[in-house]
Length: 141
Image 1: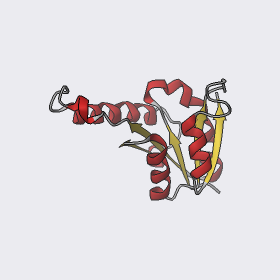
Image 2: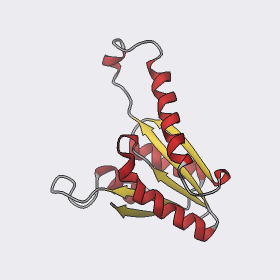
Image 3: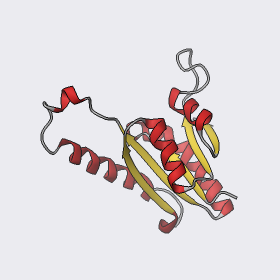
């Protein structure tokens, strides 16, 4: 049923992504699908770049890739059914683009418990739900 399952992960709150990853693993096991983890790095405003060391961007990318690889290594599926990518840009735009690029059948996104500030879903989760061309499963922590 689900051959490609995309799971956004916030490396700043990996534990918050765990319920979504667990649900995605369950879906992958039941359907023989593969997981694609994605982390989206924020763009540093140009006005701050002059204060950053020359290799800042490459170091941040490498660190994010290493941390996401650790998360991927903890997924209880065969290694050939788990992949990971780190992208740079707007969180929801990059996730939606990755879903299109990989032909994802479903995006499994974690969401915090709602507060008055987030109303029903976090802003990224709600935008993904509204604009994704594939199914989206929102998993509450």
